[in-house]
Length: 89
Image (cartoon, rainbow, N blue to C red):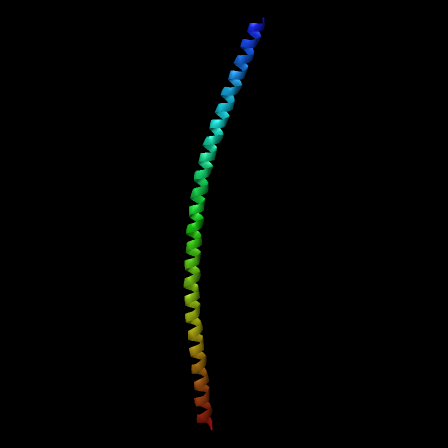
């Protein structure tokens, strides 16, 4: 009968709607989980970038110190060579 067909169609549509709502809720949950993961990764990335900058700054300072030491030692070597040359004359 027409009424039975309409009832069946309504039941199928209601079931399809229920399934679609479940899928929508599941996708929403997945989006929330992924959003939390993304925020955590962004935080980790920012922390790592900050650590990298700090390390680069420290290495730049250390390198400058080593360059100063090398320059000073080269000056000492030059002065010692001059002293040796004077003593050998």
